[in-house]
Length: 314
Figure (cartoon, helix red, strand yellow):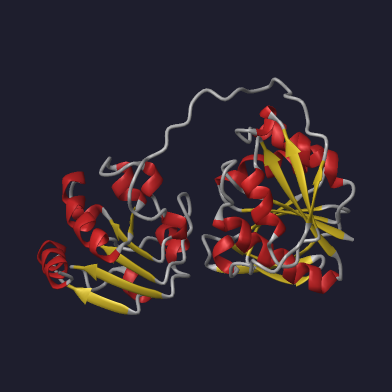
């Protein structure tokens, strides 16, 4: 048996989520006693290929280099995975927007079930994954010949790099299937860390009352070198863009420190941040659900606390 990991990247740099996914593959390889290949599908990805070759535990790096794969369109990526899948027992990708985009389609084309967002590896055919917004864990066993798996990256540490010496092999890239085309990509530019990889996150909820009051969060975030997130209620109310959203239908994060400001703690939000190492909650409602998962809770008015916190941080 051999495992295939699909690398997430932007054609220039390897995404940190790929290293978390690789960590899951390494655990699986120990259980199944098999090798690991990593696929880099894209266009002119020399730096990504070199980064992948240095990941500890990788046997081969497969390079599918084509303009048809540059933007990772679901149809083309799924076709590429399907052409390779017969040679592998397991195919893994991060459970990010990248992996969630093409893995279900590839699984359907292979007529197998996708195993979504695993948080632990039990054996070569048995895995743990969260259900009901993370309130329960299910142990599932798959008998499919090819196991298509997305990995909840916050559940696995990053794989080590620097000592790997994998060979890089060119493979035939699929042609553009013509079912979709790339039009435009709009990316929010910020000097703050990216939300899913930040060590510190400060998030705001409906308690901030409007988008302008998020400036209070920004002031604290800049002094902590933190990323800024938001609850779905704040996003739906138009306070901040939806790429700030943390939760079941947003981004799943697990920073060293998560500060929840004016967030009640609905189950959907908790599903996206409860794996954070330290959680601090600031809310005027002492009965808010967020306090049930918080390591530290402060029952106070955020409009008094945030300016004080910003001043104390200097």
